[in-house]
Image (cartoon, rainbow over all chains, first blue to last red; front, side, top):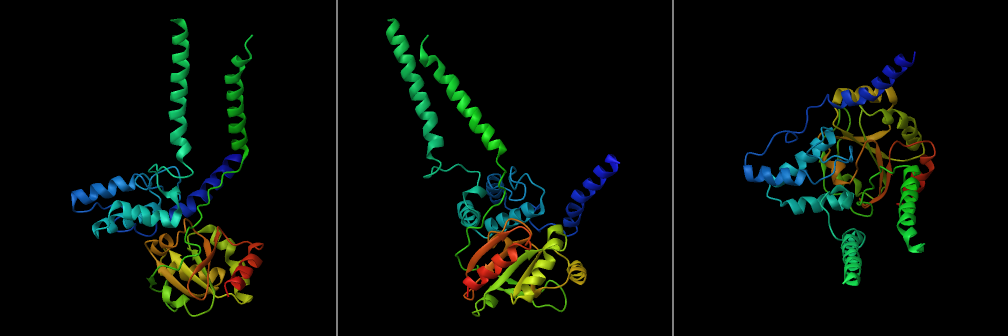
Length: 135
Length: 174
């Protein structure tokens, strides 16, 4: 009984996934750009953009159809001459910093950079006091 | 014994407490669109099936506020929200659909089965409109005012309790 239930539950999960695959992926979801320099720029950018459907993966790592559509956006925009920073800005304007994995120093993130520095300074000061005392 | 010896332990306990508290909090996976308050970006979508009109950004700038519903025939929550969209339509809301990665025959089958609350349905095979307005999933519903400005975003399926909220947002956008 529990096995049948588990199987039914698995089917419910699998159904929309299978249904999503009935459409072919976007043209540039899995196809690389002809120009190797452009493809490399696109690849580097895609590795630092968050997949919104599968939030702990980058769009380069994800097979979700939406990630494929985002890769299509990135590749066609790179091919049209947009810079990676322009594309990142375009997405950030829609989804916020959340969509980007590239760390930036801002009014909310500066403690992440400042605290380790402070701790190192603190440790240095403590060590200095200890060893200074022994002399 | 030096009382200061206990400081690291207390600091660690405080950290554990914070972590335990955060673990009990429900995870918020909604990614809100930053496009609320902005004009709809330019787009032009062909009809999602025979017998309906497609949709372009220009169609929104005629003075009437509308709901823009991002949906798909393969999306299960869209079945659950179908009767509530029907209810919104009955109460005077003009609902425009954008079908994501969908085939015309699947769209027709879905609408035959669950009703058609849409005045127009555009076909978005590459999620272009979805990405352009900052939507991160299916279904989502946006309130667009008569000037084509995005006023409100509802993430997830529309439930009975969301109907008055959306009607009020439509009224506000008037």
